Length: 147
Image (cartoon, rainbow, N blue to C red; front, side, top):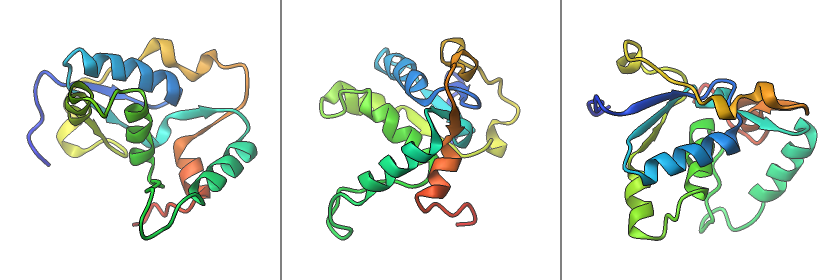
């Protein structure tokens, strides 16, 4: 892994609602901040697990496997793609912002001594509906954690 920028913000995604987290991070990326997301698999998705899994599986069937579109199954890639959806990624400022984002499953050794932050506005404790983690969704759609 490349050396970590000392000014980069490290955000712990554990217990954060994925959509709210992504929108907050997208705004910060557009403002020129470099952001690293750790514990991406522990971010949560609101709603009933069964209905969301069915929706995800139907979405994965769209397209041709050889040609695309490419749909990710790994939790870190799902979170990264969610943030990309909040960015104007087809414009130069959006592409530059997207390059400043790094997402990891778990906590890499290089980042253990660095201070992490959380986003109070995106905590799952605010939800009054059922929710589940991104890793549970990823496993349901075909991600194998041992890979």
